[in-house]
Length: 114
Length: 115
Image (cartoon, rainbow over all chains, first blue to last red):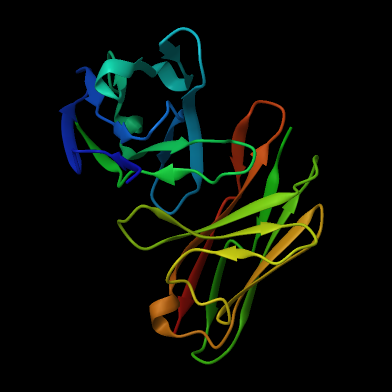
């Protein structure tokens, strides 16, 4: 069955430390891949997306993600976390962005310690 | 570009009443609109897909008679929660394919509380 997995429900990092959020997918073909961030009670903000080409994708707010076909992964990284990065992060995939809805992972809640 | 305006942002209603949520595409034509529901501390789950001029497609387990979706024009899709109950309290978000960058654009969400 097709699925998106975010293994880490909750991650706590210290401000200034590096961050990596994991995402794995299980699809017959390489899907379109997205990372979104959601602050409490707010809507979704797109951090970055991968459709094809360079497997290292740069996004907003200093985030980047690397697509690894061999591992069916699309992990999100940031070299130095800021307190304002505390939020819920969702990995999402779609097989066809024109007609198919996104399928979201279960999310990872990021807490940032001072 | 590719903005979806969702209203209301929050609503409180009494059990048994109906609530309508609107999503308007402001600067593009949304032939398709996806409706998601998000319970507290959970992920977004697709409820249904609406297509302009045709009946919506509902995901398994979603009651089509309870969650009425109308997509009568290329710029407006609505979700009506009929005979709302406290268990319908949730965050509802609409989303449309963004034609310009092959991504998706999301409404800001509606927090529904049924008392």
